[in-house]
Amino acid sequence: MPVPDITPFSAGALAQLLALPIAAGMAATVLTFLFMWPRTRREALVRLTCSICTAALLGPLLLIALHSWWPTLFDSAKVLAVLYGGPAMLGVVAVACPVMVLAGLPAWWGLGAVVLWLERRRGKDIGELVHDAAEVVRDVRRG
Image (tube, rainbow, N blue to C red):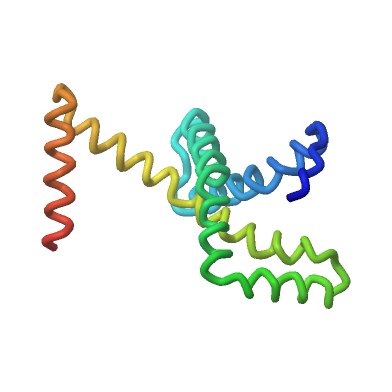
């Protein structure tokens, strides 16, 4: 088995690697602002950071799952990008961007739900929190 060629990571490569998740997280944040405008600048910054982190962490996992479930989607996107005169990677980006935006979109609401759930259980120890979480899971499974 050949040894892969490992080259040092440059700042340009890092910028290219981070550009898509950051752009996707920013787009997700803008979409959440359309539904509910932030009350303060701090809330806007937290929402932006939360969406970017979620898009960067969950987005690639969703892309891997999508590629394993529907690999022809990526092949078709590459073909269409070449047919329109662009590079084949543009087709992959065209599939990746919406998936990463969708990964970052529910981040603020998920974080808000967790914070609200913990706020309602203020003063409880970890055992009581786990018991409450198990009750919620049982209720969801029943209903």
